[in-house]
Image (cartoon, rainbow, N blue to C red):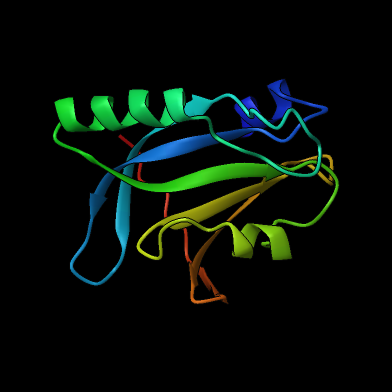
Length: 127
């Protein structure tokens, strides 16, 4: 995700997360599918319908779900902006933000439900 974010500079990068939802509203992300930012902007992102359809089909073929979305912030902290909260499409999804504000990319994950933002832990499992 960080590599995709860096490659897309100066624009925000985005992509969808494939995996499985857990019984406790958690999710396991098996893989990240980079998508094009149709907004071509350093301030907002938009995943186009073709990428959404491509990733939906990929997830279905592999018995996975789309469990969330990742996007980058090019100059700000990894925290959802008002625009991020307003356009959060699915309350079941997990929203990962990769910030490129500092020398080292920083990744954080959030749930956004009915305008409320809650940070959640990210656990990286080797293997």
